[in-house]
Image 1 (cartoon, rainbow, N blue to C red):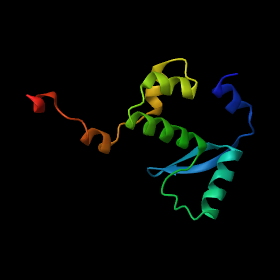
Image 2 (image 1 turned 135 degrees about the horizontal axis):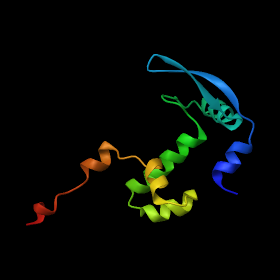
Image 3 (image 1 turned 90 degrees about the vertical axis):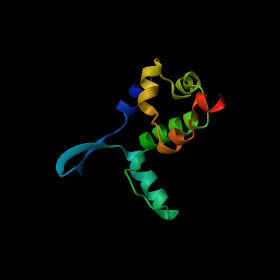
Length: 106
């Protein structure tokens, strides 16, 4: 069973969401509510939307930042294509700052 099939089998409720001044409806999964409650109990300051899916994106991005080949990340996340994995990984300014020019070694 794929990750997507598993997610869609869970109980989902609609939650109001305001983003960039626009009111929208977002899907809210029960385990996300539990995650937020645990984070608050631990004293974690939540600056953005905290969901298990956002943690999945963070996990993939951190692996990529630390030099893990995208094909390994693809396997870990259970993606059929590296294109999907590319969506889950994000380029960060810190990573861009570590890139050196091959011309520097001339």
